[in-house]
Image (cartoon, rainbow over all chains, first blue to last red; front, top):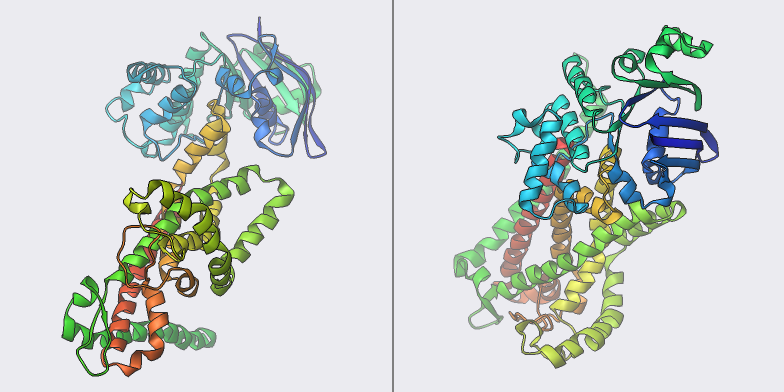
Length: 250
Length: 303
């Protein structure tokens, strides 16, 4: 079963075509990496999946994105974003809110829990899932801005998980973290794919090789090559992919 | 050592600006001393205005202090939802082509000579408020103290408060708008990515700029309390301490503006007015400094 499929997906910024007709199939419960040099449209592609592009006034989408066979552009955008969680390149927990509230926020507004007790449970569950519980369980009322960068990023993962998404989008989640924190996130990705589908954008082929089952290589808005990670890394069919993987382009 | 002549030339200018400020404060304090010596703190704690060329004079400006604070509070309470709503509209909803014109228009509104607001207030706003707000409320709800004063002329705390609200909204909204516009994109995206609706996301983001909103209102309060001419045209200029919104009153600045012309006939009235001015000076200074500190602390603490 495919968690996400795109059909001839095109994205314009103004009159500039930045995603040039992408067809992708992302199997469920796998880690699917989208890699490519910066500016190739990886983040844009990701934001077309959860319709976050709509925040950008000049962005226009054509084609379709399907979540388990249903077009996200025919669903309510709030529901789409609940089912497709997202973690960003810059850890962005709301700094003026507590650790607890950062997670409870989405839970409350999406009416996932009925009462305080249920919210408490979800907060604990998702912090455990994000491997952050042990570090923060005694300071849930602390401001999120007091956490380290790596902890903040795991808090963002926790708050996305709290909504029980079917897919988790990760936009270069380790780009701004130290190596130790980055490693923790990668381990977490490994754990999480048992339960949900992860689409991770990365500009590092090494990271794609470490964490993903499938990989797609995007270059200047076009899908150059896609397939099982080991196959592509062992034997890229396309010359561009080979260049990229061997570090002659990036 | 090389001497920077330009810097040297700027130094006296800076000194003069601050010197004038300091001297002004000194003048206010020294000119207030006679009335303090005569009455003590009664100048601030009583509501009396007994001017006499021959007999005993006595001045207490409590009514004006009360009126200043009362009208400014009304103004800020009205301006609060207006300016937040306006800021959010301009940043999030206004079509691109309308954004800049709206911003320019509000900045112009904030900078208009206040007498323009005053005349409009006296001739248009006051009759409208009297007819459509005060009279119906008085008719049906006069048992509530807020609405208990018969709106005979319409010149009242409410008129002054509403007029001030109209005047400070562009200013407060500019501060909020700039802060709201500066909310980093990652937080905006983060809020929406959590499945929040536009309204919910806006609430969260407004929470993020709360310190800026608060300081915007302190600064707006500071402006409102210092406003003179527009207020004196609509507040009624009556020594009155009344809880009702529809009662006429005085504000410190309108008191000074109204009484200054003939104050020098009397022995102590100039000093009393200086003392009233000193009160305004202190209130304004405290409010503005608090607002600025808050704004600065927020913009430095931002991630």
